[in-house]
Length: 394
Image (tube, rainbow, N blue to C red; front, side, top):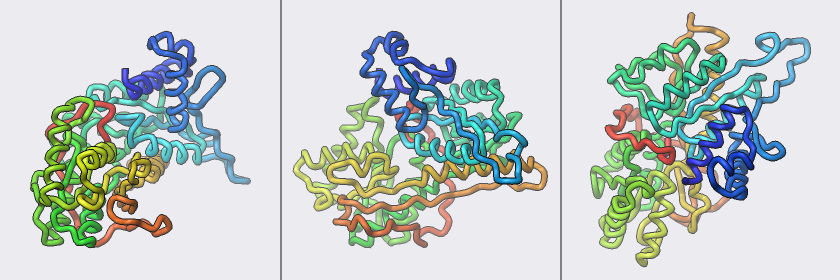
């Protein structure tokens, strides 16, 4: 069993029982105490569990101290907010921390559900949260809500809902919901613009197959290349399957990138996600190619990019802020109801963090904000294929 699977099972057990004991989990999973302690430590570091003697519990928000002379908003304590995310181990822990911090600020409690990128699990987890008595929901469905209406049930729930890191297409039945999401198209455009300013004209897109984020990254890349008057080396880009699920397919994709760098067909690449970028850099160097000398590279997501050797330049979505704003939207909806309040659709622009795979960067230099290279990239269609695993980003 992979670490991600163990950790999500531990989280689910904590939700069902209220707490987990290291000894019991080790016996149930048939693994060592050291392995379970390591998993619990990772979940505690992500803010998803709170450590207690012999195990861990779900983190309960501390009630915020009331302003002198004023009672808390609802007279005694804040709301209980349910949050559904597809993964507890990649990208979303920082979103969850942002939401948790915002819930604490209003004296509430955050309850978490994990879907593991399984659409059927979305509904089961939401039903569990509703049975637990949540006042509102922050939802990141496993797939981007498309026009077919399969996800319209989320718009008919008995409590207020805010979509998080998902954009609902027209016809999805969810257009009326509040939402907050990273503008991944603008994020991709920043990467292309930076590489263009360094003199690169043959910029290749390498993107994770089936990720809900990939269509937006592809749209931003395509628009930015056109704005710079550049022709993509491969208009469709190089799609990478998850290396743990299709190792041969991943190797074939990496070989295409290596050959493009070796022949000069590509001198730079935007790689989504940074886990794939880290593996790609290792393979490039093993093939005798230099990064950034033979292939400059900007990763997307900035989850582990700074820990690579060399550290990867990366596009960093504002994950913590996404979680915080989602709670603020939901709290306002709980306070005001549906009457007289138009739905809010908020987009946050990621930041470009310069490191060693584009050029030697001054660590004290400011990160680069979004520029005017795009003036409204259309919302891309939902992907036709969704990688239903807890390791697929966003």
